[in-house]
Length: 243
Length: 243
Image (cartoon, rainbow over all chains, first blue to last red):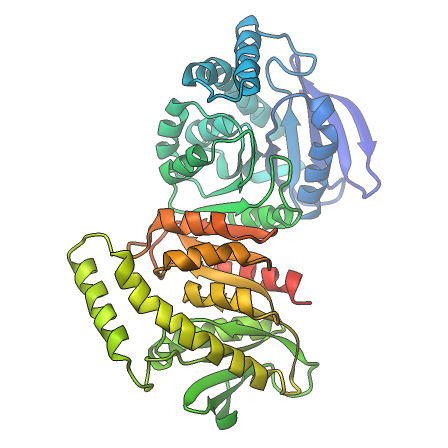
C-alpha cells in the first residue's frame, strides 16, 4: 500500500489517498495523537470519484464516532479496466429495467457473481495492509453496498466482526443461500420505496441471514433517501460490536 | 383523576397510582423541580398488575430520557368488568391457536374492534386529565401495543405527535385500512420470530401506514425478546419528535 495524497479536512479528519497495486482507495482517520481506532470498511456501488462526496460524509461521521474508515475502488469501476462480460451484463440489466420487466436471475448472476469473486479478495488484501498501520487496531466492520460483497466478506473474512448492509442492489440467489452462513451481528438498511430494489427479495435475504443478532431498519423513501438519523444509528451499532 | 398512591422509586422517579372514574392507571415523572415534560403513553396488552414490572422498566427508561410516562388499565382487564362477548372471542382465539390453525378474521374482529372502540375514548380522557397537570407539557407520544389501539389513537387524537408501535398482536383488517390515514411519524417494532404474530400482516400493515416518516425495526427473537438497545432507540425517536 502506497499513500499518494494527504489532506486535512476542515473538521480535522486526515484523508489519505492510496493505491494497493492498481487499486485506488482512501483512508480517513482522526489524525495524530489518538489510540488505534477500530476500522470500518465503506462499501459502495463502484466509482470512487462520483461516490466521493457521499463517502467523505460517511467517513467523517464514522471518524467523529471514534472509528477509522477506508474504501477501495471496485473492479471494473472508475479508472480500473472494464470486463467485457460485466459490461454486457450491465447493458442487459439496463435494457431489462428500461423495459420495466422483471430482471432475469441470469443477468444478475452474470453481473454480480464475477464482481464478488474479484472484489472480495481485494477487500481482504486491503484489510491486510490497513491493519498493519499503527493508527488502526481492533475489530473491523463492513458498512454499505454492494450487499453481495458484504455477504461474502462476512462469510469468509473472520476479521470482520459486524456489518451494516444496505439492501438496495441485486443479489444472486446463491448469495441469498450463502447468507445462511453469516453469523456476525448485522444491521440491514432497507429503503421501503426503492424503485430499483426487490422488496420481497430483501425481506427473504434478511430472513436467510444466520446471525443470532440481526436487525432490519426499513425506512420510507427511495434508493438514496436513507434518513440522516440512520448514520448515528449505524455508529451506535458499530460501537456496540467493535469496542 | 384522583391520585391513590405515591412512591419514590430508588432512582428518584416519582410513581403515582391514580383512578379516572373506574379506570386505574399510573403516572411516572422525574419528580419535583423540573420543567414540564413531554408525555409518553405506555400501551400494553391489558393486566396492569401482571405487566407492572415491564411497565415500570419502560417508564423509568422514558423518565431517564426526560419524559413523563403514564398508562391506564384496558377495558375488560385487571379488576375491570369483563365483557362476555370479548371473553367468548378470547376463548375462540385460544382454541384456534391451540389447534395450530390460522386465526379467522372474524375472531380477531370480535376480540379487538370492541376493545378499540372502548379503550380509545378512555385513553383520550386520560390525556385530558394528564395534560392538566403542571408537571406535564408539550407533545405526546404513544408507545407499545395493542397496536390496533395505537392506530386508532394516531388517527383520531391530534395531540399525539409520534408513535412507537409494537407489531405483535392481532390487527383487524379494517384497522389495517385505517392505518392509511395515519400521518404522524412512526417507529414500528417487529419481532421477526414472534410465534404469535403474522409476519406478513405486520409487513402489510407497515406498508399501509400513510406517514411520510415511518421506520420499522425488525429484530430476531420472539414476542418478548425485544433487544435492550431498542429502549434507547425508542427514546431517541421520541426525542426527535416530541421536543
